[in-house]
Image (tube, rainbow, N blue to C red; front, side, top):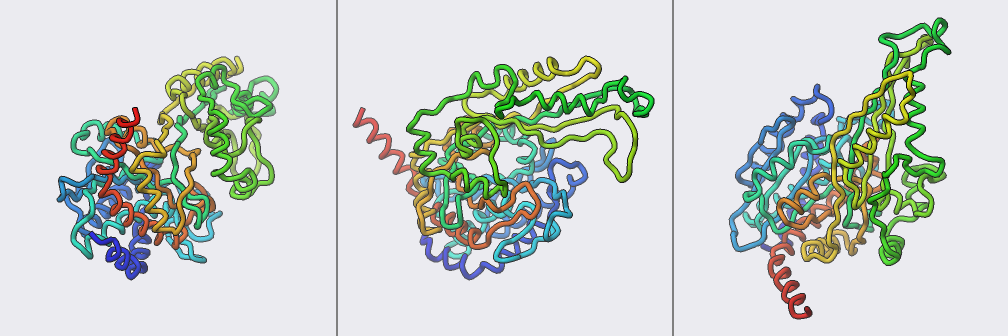
Amino acid sequence: MDPHRALKYARTHRATFVSELKEFLRFRTVSSEPEYANDLKKCAHWLANHLQHIGLERVKVIPTKGHPIVYAAWQRTPARPTVLIYGHYDVLPGEPVREWRTPPFNPTILDGNLHGRGASDDKGQLFSHIKAIESYLSTGRALPVNVKCIFEGEEEIGSPHLTSFIVRNKRALRADAAVISDTRMLASDRPAISYAQRGGLRAELEVKGPPHELHSGNFGGAVHNPLQALCEIIARLHDAHGRVAIPGFYDDVRHWGEEERVFMERTGPSDDQILQDAKVEQGWGESGFSLYERTTTRPALTLNGMAGGHHGAGAKSIIPARAIAKLSFRLVPNQDPQKIAQLFRDHIEHVTPPAVRSSARTFSPIRPALVDRNHPAVRAAAFAYKKGFGAFPVFLRSGGSIPVVTTFQEVLGCPAVLMGFGLPEDHIHGPNEKFYLPNFYNAIATSIWYLAVAAKLRTAERMEKQTKWQSS
């Protein structure tokens, strides 16, 4: 199949593609909030109908105990490789809404960017591949390779039902490569392929004191305040140098040699770039490592939120009955999320003041992932980026976590190709999330080229194996 015809179709249909992406973004697919469950179902069916409309087959909306999985395929050339395309249609909440320039679920174009929750993470990046598939099927009625699509609605809550789905359907989901576009580039003219993902673990910590709120005049100074106790516990999670203070936390952390550190310094963002992206003046954290290393090869524990006591207008002189905190770990090879969970719970029990009661809950464990930079499927992505963006990509580590990466590699035995199209300034997970429209167009072109080059994957793998055998 000639990619040039598909590329021409994509160029002439840009306005339509953006209009359809806007429609996709209007769904309030917040997976963490039960009130939006119906919105996720509606979005899943909209997505399935769209996939069927562009020519994909075997389209299904598969229910889970949580939110649906959307599956589609095109398998008409058994002798050719199969590319599995993954993405997620769920998003994080839009709050605080008052900090958005435009409403989070009313997609708006400003200064060449499409603003809206999910624009970059991950609806816009996911949609790039859908439009590449459409561009082929609308011009040649065929794809260069076989394609399978898995689009889930639970990535932002740790993909609790995806692994079991993949395990149950292991044979049906077999592929030569799994393409995931849920990461970012260095800049619009500096594409990047992610070759490492940190793992993750989420936690909730609750501290209880009296059975109900108490008058602070009658009991202040005599009864320990659960909110204050929670602050004391949180303060003992890090030491004065920014290291996590949980005993045993660093025992299994893999240490990287000088060669890898030099490679990261040469290809990754500088401290100044990271601070500029965050719009802060000074860094923080574990000494002896660059900010890029701290956010990729080193683990972290982050306090995501706290609640307790009175936080409305005016004053209320009380001692609250309870307080809660939400936290998240970012883990690195060779840390085990289950082991870290137990260390965390043990530490919380040890540092809880005796006058209050604490309970710690951990969930959404994600193992760290590494990708072979030299695999033919990854090299094909590098070529596609050169054609789509006009520049070869750099290889970056990512500080984020994508649960499905290790699942694809370990359960399906296929390499994960992390082709990111977002930008550091896209404000994912925060107010004013956006997707730079030139990146959207170039991402479609890159995906078109990737599908063309992926047609030769099996030949490239055979040649690589033969070369290794001859040299051994």
